[in-house]
Length: 226
Length: 401
Image (cartoon, rainbow over all chains, first blue to last red; front, side):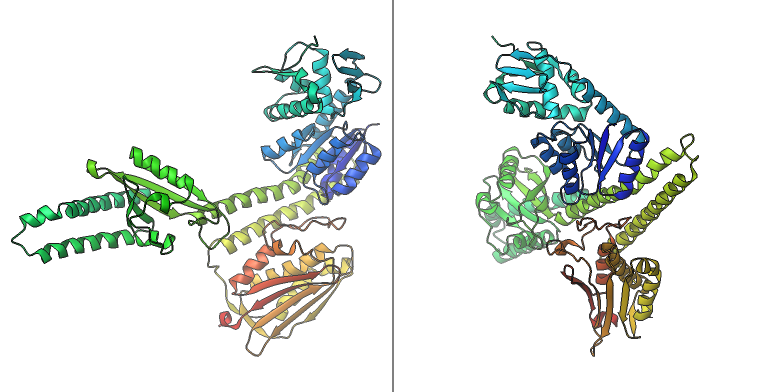
């Protein structure tokens, strides 16, 4: 049974979301503030986190940041649940590594559908075989990348983007394609965060970052090594 | 308004050109009018100039006329006020307007001689900042070129401080954003459970359905209170003047009324309210006083849902008829860092593990503050978390008369 952690300070909202997930066959845990939420993420490593942004103690953005930095949590998908409807807030959350967002008032049914889509995508990702590409090595058992045999710490989104591009080295990939691979669909808000994720990925590759090339007007490409 | 300003400028421009023309042609005119007395002509010119200056001074805007060389050659009294008496007449704009955005705008318009209307923002420490606030100030800048006489081309600059209206616009926007934010949570709960209940078979199991309806009901009540509070605060903030229904009333009755309304909550939390209020009359609006006391007592109870709280209400009327009332409790209190902000709309003190089932509206304390101020009084709060938190309202005598 897949486990869902709901971090939400409004008790009635948390119960409403919990009720709907339980009804759809998930095991549910609830945290009512940021600190408790972060502890439960790191300790229990749920399959999916539903995260409110405005939380007491530690707010949702900080939780996202901390999740990215920790190897125990950086690959756990997150859906932001927030009353904020300003596009900037959603952008910020997506750039910090959230997978999706839903704004209050929301339809629980829609939330469940989005959660199911994310969980399904996560299950089918690791179909890649081990490979070597220039300075990069992919290890399918460790589900990790190495640069000059040093392990790379990538977020789930960065990982997916890099794997997809490496498997198609030398070919330009258009933005829509990349968006669909990572988030399952493409909309304007997600599109605006793509460049941020690519920039961060490039930075993590250090001096080998130049392997990722921006193809103006199209998207991105990982260069074939000579 | 703009049309009015513009027509004013046209008239002024005409007068100014005439006066300039007069000044320039004064000598030749004198020649022609040799027969007339010298004094006579001068007097006429002077009186004309005075008329013009009076007209300019009557303008609500600050007015500057600037020659094509960039010299300020005429200002009105508003302009003088902005510069706080600093002598700016016959000075170059480089020395007068130190703000670079302002200067470049003027230089551009001087070279092109085109009318312009712009809103500029100045930092708090600039000369244009109104001294009443430490925020940026906003000014409406209007520039009209005056080139009716080609050789005497100059521009007229008018400035108006619109900081207050920009600020109130922002307050309104924030209010709408915050209010809709507050409404989203109860709406989510209601629509979320409705989605389930209206599904086929959603009502089959009676007990959970009943529970959901109960939760929905609580949030309907919450929406109601948010809407009520929003109306109340907008009434209290709509003008400088709040229409009060002033009449003598007994404050002790008011307190008893509030305690009665909150009786259920008080009992449930096993809290106690101690009341030291004599039976004296006060002149004020009883509706708002009930609201003030209700919000303060309810607030104290809501902040401390899980402890038996001791609340003490003490009111006194001193020999000079100054009224004071304290509402004190021994609850978790307010952290010092939050104290300065608690009367702000939608401000909430973050706390952990101490939530009531349904949050307040976020407007309670700002309503209290506004209502107290409408009565000419002040409210202050002090808090030693865990020991004592006191709200003190003081109404000086003068207003009660």
